[in-house]
Length: 440
Image (cartoon, rainbow, N blue to C red; front, side, top):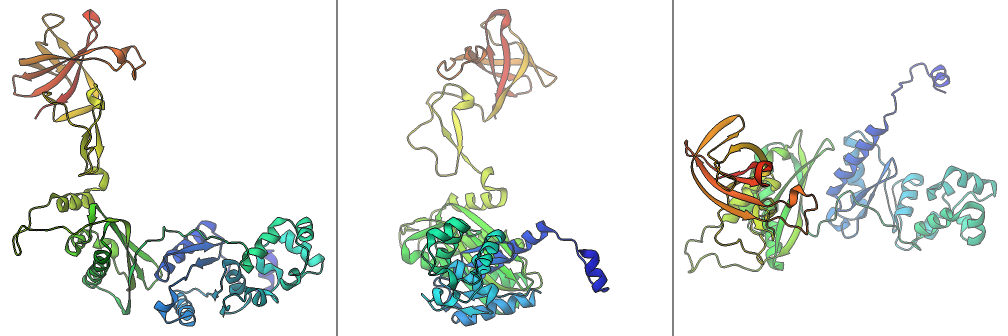
């Protein structure tokens, strides 16, 4: 009990346990470990799994990589125990029960034999049962009948043992989707100035674009991770409407996101990876050598999308529907549907309301355009009117009786020059008037 501990150690420092803060810290460390591999995942409440396949030569081999991890975490105030093995289960066991070990490939059985059964990530009751049977080490389980072990201790024991020995594949779930390409830089001295970060990012972009050009690919999005010396991670990303491998264009898009890559007390590593790749064939920029390339609106759209948000820059594509509010949909710029065309001979307002607004209108006859109408408490006298344009309901889609009524649309202009799109719904005294859009 806490009271007993304080009685034994009067200067004992006591801190309330905060599970949420612990989880956030572990997630931060996992994100920081992406400097070593694109696949990192939390391992329980106090560890991180790293898939180092193909990554160790970048750091001078396995011993140098482990030493670098321990040293960098120590500078951040963390004490780390590390191990490398052919399976996640074996690495988990060695990191906790053997100090800084590298297991030889295929030698998991011999390496784990002398470790206690607690190294198999078992439940406490399972461990107590094994201890009661006199099975205190992993090696003592090797020659035992699997059926007997499963009957006495459950199938989880056999599964964990097979995972540690590599008989059953144990996948890890990385915190981020593994990118298909990566460019990374480690700096001998931490970067302290934003302009140094911008220069390093530009070099990463140029190197990545050169590799993409050799493979005939283009990036639809890029993400840059900056690893600070205090253990935190800075992140910035951009997107493009079309595949691109133009370093100048991609660097301009990142220029507006450099504030997100604040080096803080120092940034000692950066990783750049594409979030999406598409084939990109070479394109002739000009008609003759040395000629000026034609203007491209794609670069402008990309800058607007990254500045305003990808969902705020869009194009409109036609939809097969009689109702004006259903006759169009938002699509990404440059990806509008090509198999549909806007109907010819129709005049539609520049601004169409999502929901028509009810108005009060007076017409000399039931089938005539209104003489005046009141919208948003302002009475407007009609000077000119065109119509009606009758739009029938879509009986196969609209079930409500009100939604199945025919609409008669009018284009009207008031005395102040404002142009409106009105419609009458219903007939006779039950007719109702609505304002559906505004012309330029």
